[in-house]
Amino acid sequence: MFGLALALPCQARVVGLVLDDSGSMAPIFERAQFATQLLVSVLDPDDRLYLVRLNGDGGRSAARST
Image (tube, rainbow, N blue to C red):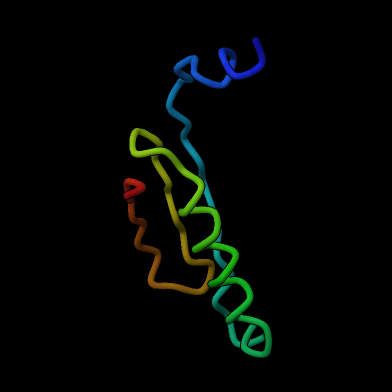
C-alpha cells in the first residue's frame, strides 16, 4: 500500500530561490552553489525553479529541472 502511494502523480512545483552572491558570501558561496545544485537535482522535470541573484544585475532566470 505504501509503494502505491509513492506511484501517484503529484502536482508540479514552483520554487523561488534568492541566491546571495554578494561579497560577504564569498567565504561560503561554494556551499550556497552546492545547495542550489542539490535543490535542482531533486526537482521533477515539470517543476519550475525561479532564481534571483541578490547582488546580480537584477535579471531573473527560469529553469526547468533536467
